[in-house]
Image (cartoon, rainbow, N blue to C red; front, top):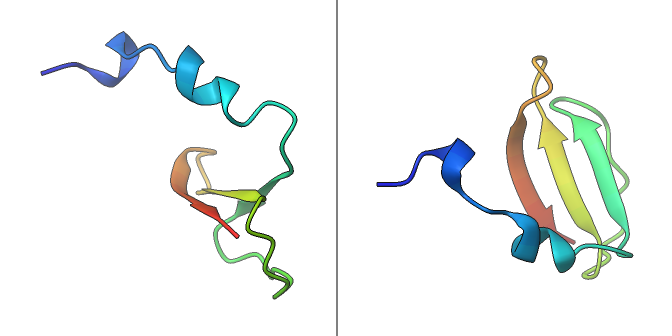
Length: 55
């Protein structure tokens, strides 16, 4: 089993370079406009990624 720190994310991250990204805190109010090409990244109070989704 690979540990998170042992995974090479560079190939995965290449797919989002130049894309629209919205980063927000859990509990923040968000607009309801759906943009399929936008990556949404939700962070908790410790600035850790809780959820990632397109739209």
